[in-house]
Length: 281
Length: 191
Ligand SMILES: [Zn+2]
Image (cartoon, rainbow over all chains, first blue to last red; front, side, top):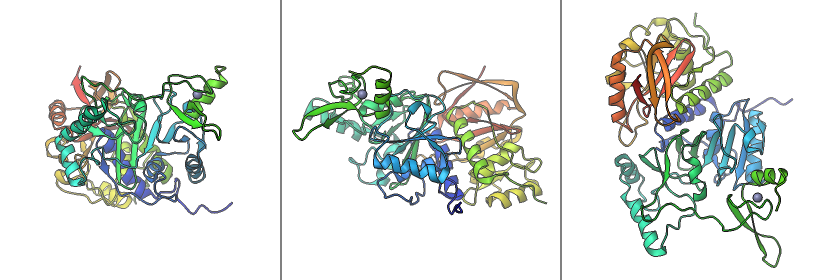
């Protein structure tokens, strides 16, 4: 047996303590971005170092970890993060949403309803919902402090004026606990309603931008919209070619070299379970 | 002799943090914290919170009845936290409920509301005493929490604290090895 040359869950205790303090503050101020001194992780940046640091600060030996990239458990990114925590924390891993106590994700919230006792950890590339509208960090901090979100409403309204509807399909901004406008990370707008009054804990980590934020259970998370243009998330008007589902988020895939396209569930675990329950097309 | 800290520092700190995370995410839920080897008169849960969250980056304030030489020495040894004389400077304030400096604690700033104090408040117990009705983020509808040894000034202070949102002080109520959180968003009313 080789000597273990790293600490449990990779990060040192001092680093974990700082992240843990930031997480408690983030839960106490839902949707507010709390700064933290982001560390390097032994995976390339852009592979979710913020999410990995949050997972490392939270995870314990009794946890069961699921990692999803897009909606799938079997992408290179998901597999390597899962293996990493299997190795440095010795935890059980799973692909089944209902078995997991900790779910690290990029791009999706599982279709299987979450429950109390589960923690979602999001890998966030850009935590600032106002970044496209206001490049100055000092200024966005001021706007959040004043709850001055006029520029966001103007941007959404311009979208409506130009396209007849709000065209944002991903990273659709939400208002949390009636106070902070928050980026839900690059999940499809289709997943936004799953954050609203969810029984689970949702933790967001942005490594490059050094920010942590959170949504506690049973917290109001409302997608921004207008009375005459209510929130209507985009979804393919199709059924899953594998399980027949019409109420899940679908990915369009090319199945042959003639460019034939089919729609399949983005959440591979959910799709497999549905087929296993004998509901194929 | 210094009493020891956590028996298993890495895993006990993780378990304590997860309990505090659940407590903060679900206000009014009573959680148990691991044995912390607390020196008298510091309660077990207060010591576990210090071992889990305090270090040289967090100023700690202790009220007069807690600031004994043995407690101060134990905290310095295990956390390296600077002990401050003014509660306004504290990241963590440990106080008995009847003498807590409620109005003196830092509530953060509009831009950095996270730079506020966490008040670790020692109460007599979570048995029938003052019956609180809680609502807000983390609570599906309503939660009832009984706390023995909470002064009536606490409720008036909480109402003012809520009005400061997003600034405000977050509270951890503790007794023995038990803790329950009242983050700044929780609406606290007496039944
Ligand atoms: Zn399917």
